[in-house]
Image 1 (tube, helix red, strand yellow):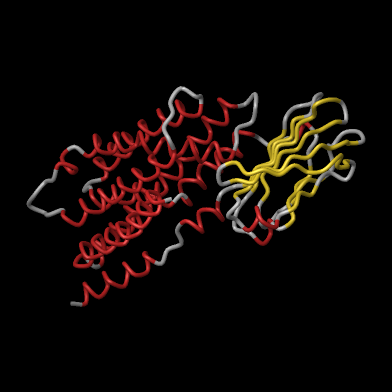
Image 2: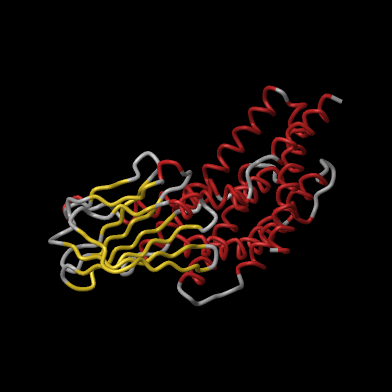
Length: 329
């Protein structure tokens, strides 16, 4: 009886886990500042319309720049786009750019600065550091490092992909089998991520997101129905299941990368390092989950199956909510 009480308690805790509103808050903002002619700049600011930042945020432009004309605002999907024309006196290097209101949000912002006569800079703003100084070329931030971090954050904070990987770990037995299955998932979502980002593949985002939720529900059911003396199809050929669903998850990753934006001239590097960051985050999930299950098995073996069942029910409940939300949206 105490096991089922624990299951109900964990299910309730997982069911209260933040869902769509939280996802909008965590979606990164994007600022792109491009020099069109000496001293003449265009600035694009993109933020989720559902986030606090999109509704109340304000751009902090370099001190030596002035806004020319009125800002142009438009909706693009779930984002608000703000365009500004700037006139800057001299180089913007050594000046600051930032977002007012970022310190009150739960998201980050990616900043891309593209001068005519010097190298592009990619900066990252956070709630703890809502402004950044535009560096001289010798100390420009690395595009690879920025997009690697964004990839790690996306898998760790993109709860649908996180739940899928976690469900795979709960379903399978043995580190080697988990490794092969996660590798199949990696290969599959890498293929569609690259293909979709480069414009070679395309699927409507809403059906893709709905089927991603359905894939998590499927795995949660498989975890609940698993029996020690019976090997289900998903346990016999898990890499096939992971590969097929991974193709769809790749479109989801591509959608997130499109929301963030890619720097012109560095698309291959940004794409590669974003995918690398996703894989690093994925390995972290697998390692932590396997370590936690090993600890439960070693110190309180009787709790292992109830814990797996509780997690599967919680994952299934949240994913069902996502599926319904994405179908009726």
